[in-house]
Amino acid sequence: MPELRRNPLNDIWVIIATERSKRPSDFADTGGEHIKDTKSCPFCLGNEHLTPPEITAVRKNGSKPNTEDWTVRVVPNKFAALQQKKRQPRYK
Image (tube, rainbow, N blue to C red; front, side, top):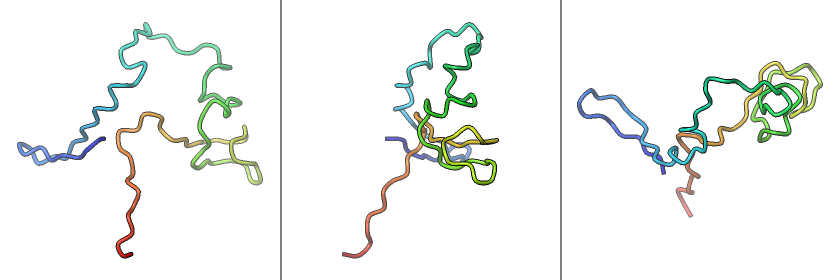
């Protein structure tokens, strides 16, 4: 589980996230090439089905979530460095 730690030498907070080493493409050699086939690009317009459901989006009035009518779209990070803890009730 990721943790926040304070570096005692310079008093800066850092993230220690060992789980991020499990990312599948961290060490893949892409040769600097970009995806040319927009049908397989999860971030291209029209491929909303390739991403998790959106968190929020800037879209045309009246357009439905997870459809093509967006200008900016935010989706969860599949390999997030930090995770939000579920809050425990203070009182029972």
